[in-house]
Image (cartoon, rainbow, N blue to C red; front, side, top):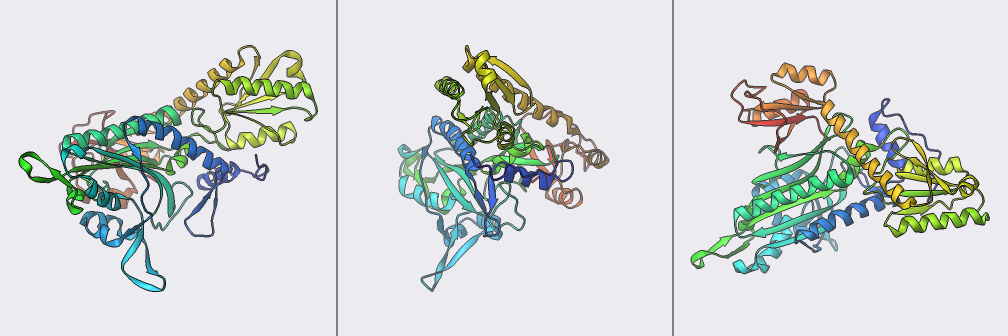
Length: 479
């Protein structure tokens, strides 16, 4: 464990939320700025967290029948031009290579912002008949989108993600797939990351470029802004038609297939930071934490009794699958606590002469700071119970904030009052269109985050137009 950031002071969240966020990232050893504008270096603690996310989410993706593949980072620009709405949506964000070996390319190469185009070129070669369907693949990759304003994890020019892509015979099968993966994201975010979230459908203005429907997983951060945590798209058959992805249907006629795509990126680390971290540093949700328990020896490395107990406790915990690390820094106990606290490790176990004599360990919870003394008998079960208790505590606190900062509005004045009073998420009836959404963005800096699957209320009229509500929506400022 590096102690290079041990003396780094974190700006209180109440003083400057933006600086607090960046200070937590630095103090916890999650990421650092690179010399390339808009790009970040993900440090060991950040990589360990992303690897845990990748392993846990990857297991869920594999369990639903998807296989991993890897596609090129460079995509011919001509591929993007085949789907009109797709190129229109991504054109401002494309980073391109226009020269190779000193020669101007007739067809520039794009650093992938997403991989639909290159993957559907591959699908066209793979699919001939209905027997070749469905194709269900997943890719872990880095992607590039040119951003004017960047913030580590939340919005960077280069970021890492997983992107799933599937091809199906019918619309019904494809829509079911898109909804299934959206639900997998929702469960993962809540069950593993302890972040309460809302699933729903995007409006036409907010949906993915080229999609027929976009399903989203949204959460509300303590700042009062919403964060899109993951999305799943039903793409219809337009992408397939543009790339000749077709199969032989009834009566021997060729027909385009129906496709989906879905993804979650390193942006989710930003969601974890903002949801759970505090003014002392990072707080790792126990089920996803790379290190769940840090054992802190009190005394010199030559005290064999202490070291023997450290080894015994470490082995007991590791035997039941608890991810444990022993602090071998040799630092004073106060500095050990301070360093692991900033990194967000859920539990810190102190073992010194007092603990050896009593046959106990002293445990400190990262979320509450509470200290408890546990006997060695069955210590692994007690530690596991504390980790579970911390997960539910974090989830409960975040769910309480979401409920407290959600406001029902029936008029535009209600939105103005709610924003002035610090509410973040607004439930409303809606009968507007794109022009009304533009007005909300320009005047109130808000967007319709989603048309929720499970509306918290049902309001009869549109809060903006006064017309009978066509649907229920959730509105918020966002990252």
